[in-house]
Length: 273
Image 1 (cartoon, one colour):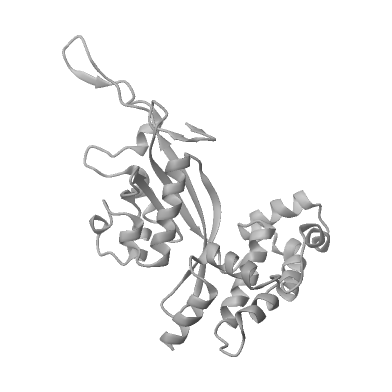
Image 2 (cartoon, helix red, strand yellow; image 1 turned 90 degrees about the vertical axis):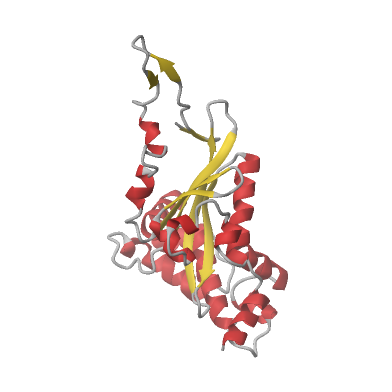
């Protein structure tokens, strides 16, 4: 059962039948599919192993993986799932991503509150950016206590031009790409698309899998990543070129989305060159 405070897993209550056989009172509850099968496999995990653009995981209250799909295993660099299970994100993912995952886990478990559609950027071996939206929900037992969390991270599609509704937002998207150095407001962008603010936001979610605000952040930080490869530009110059009022505002946003500062990213790229 899913409520605003988290996913409540049905407890398994055992009773003895008149013939002396113990039985579970919850075996017919469809929520039992979230539990391991007798052979130790997780039906949900097996289902999501074939989703190459989605990471799935379940963690205990200490943040240790108890279930992962194969996409997470591959992206962690592990040879087998058993190399991931029982470890925290900080132990599986080296550096900034692992620390950021751990901070999210602690927040979700401690506050018992879900994290919904958090926009995040990750960097490949050559510093190339990739984007995802992360959603984490606390898991509670029958007594309402948080006993872990479940979550997914969905890749943001690299291309959206083939979506059937792309033409309806194309003008607004083009405007963002051409004017991201300027203050942009949702009403202005909605007007570019000839839509109300509510209709524009719903359409953006359907086409881009993001809100207009998230898409603008993506456009600005994609531009920033490219400019940070230019050693002659200062961080302040890049901040203003990407629509941020000052160095501090840009650094805060960059760090919150990527886990590192713009200067740290620049140093990484320069050292790898």
